[in-house]
Image (cartoon, rainbow, N blue to C red):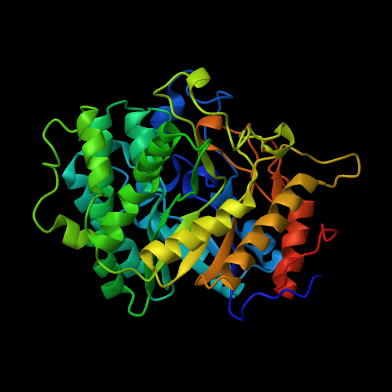
Length: 458
């Protein structure tokens, strides 16, 4: 070990989401979600799979909590399956609440703090049939979910995240069509982004009422954005990209306004034919409801190259394309320095008070060797370097208070199906056997020591 120690009380955790691990898709009254519908459409999931069984966590949560206890994690971030609680969008399903009762109680018995995410992308299909997140009524429906779940679990759960990555929900789901519900309309995507933020603002005081003393926040997939060259075209493209990815969500939350340059850009592109007419009086005030922490999901930086001029007419790249050896199985560049800079930028520009890395991880396909062990050395290196990046941010004065590794288990990776493995625990999806990978054992040592691992610690 290097002797570089994290602050006392720093939270070490792992993260999952309901749809990706639970399975039991028709069990105990669970309704259909937009991801069930999306996965059933031919050609949309890379390996043709679905999440009907996934990691079978609904039945194996005891085993999975035992794994977390062995790893020594202090916190577990998981999400509530909305269709388990409201199978048809309305009418509480008690059996769904009972499952999360059992899970939370088991976590507390293992001295693992539950961190609950209320929405991690699995909207009930019944609500999608009524317009989904383009319908302002869905924001009201989310508040009802937040009310029911926080009232039920608020005596035991003190850490709440309203939404996971509203950029992905709105842009990938409604503009690009690469995630559920698979729509491709930019105006809809912008409306959705507003309704997500509005539902967040509405839900925060409801959670606080039901769980006095709780800490409430939300999670964004914030990222460092860098121009590929010093050219004016790349600078403008980077500003636009940062506006859409980061400032479009951060500015309303912290400043109570949408960034004017991004609004103007969308208007020029014809994406706002009626302007921002979907923003009603007091909406931005509601969105700006103070939160206790900001969750950050970080996987890689964004290096932006302008598409408005031919490549041959642009300036030479000052940031070269990454070495293939520095790409994960998702094709994402391994760039831990970007995590430090992302956290530092959030601290300097928005002063959130408390930051938590709510997801960070890498997809590598390494499986068991002949000895039955999973020697995922590339993930070990990724983990070591990104934990170092967290400590560098803390040393620079960033109020970073926790780190959740994505993910506990190999799981259903959305449109990639089971073809991408992010877990520190290997899962055989046929037998449901679990094997802790070398990265999992490394993470256990980090947690036990609260120290930065050295280069040979894997």
